[in-house]
Image (tube, rainbow over all chains, first blue to last red):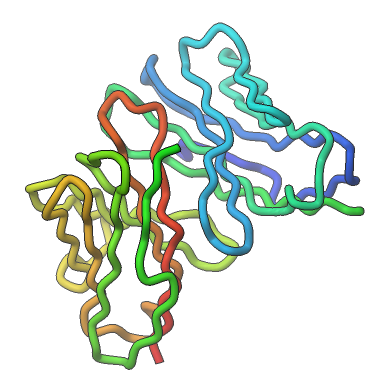
Length: 115
Length: 116
């Protein structure tokens, strides 16, 4: 089974609007971390936000927030007030803390911000 | 934030030659580094996990004799593509884990390899 599932290959959003990028995960490890990375066309991977499995509150970092629904095993990324520079690939990732150091990545979502 | 430097950013080599890509953690010691390969419009594919002072652990289907990984120090891991062929052309990206309890990994800038 896929560890990380991103069901939206591509998304469009109007500039200044909010957008939600979906991510669901599968793990039996009670201790895990969830991550979102942004990859612009240059290729670099930019860390955006982190959510620990035991964190009580949803993580927020500036315009990024993570909608963590543990029972549903979802960790959607919400980008508020979209900017043209937000156009990029976005990857959801998970690390199982008790079973090794490996990070599992989803297939990514290509976000295009429309002026 | 933590910085991981990858070099070279771009490299073009002839078929049959070898090319080395370096991954350095600049402001932390990385006991573990990861090497990924990424095809256009696709996700990162883990090639191997590199632990300082020990042999790399390769993922299934990755040829260890073709993709040589050396993690000689806590700040440097290298990936050598031996006897490169055009099908090895890809984007290679490394990442480093500052410690077992670290909340995240830090990525290098990536290296675009073109084999002609």
